[in-house]
Image (tube, rainbow, N blue to C red; front, side, top):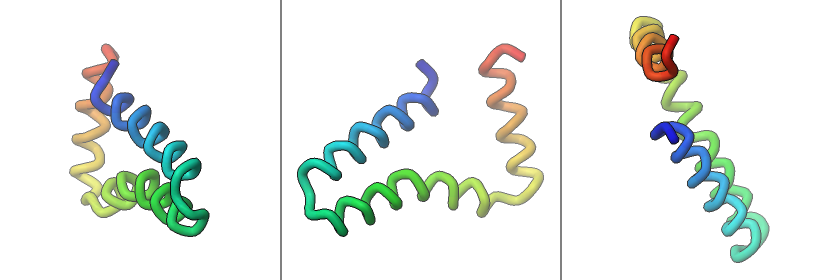
Length: 63
């Protein structure tokens, strides 16, 4: 399992636990932060940094 997929699985498990255990509004805010944080970080990169990240990911996949 790649490091990126481990992050996705961890975020999904944390989101499900938050929805089950925390009050409704707090749980939804936590889910948005867990899933939206990496997306916001990706969009904060320069175009050249995004291209480099795509190249590195492609090499890890085997393409």
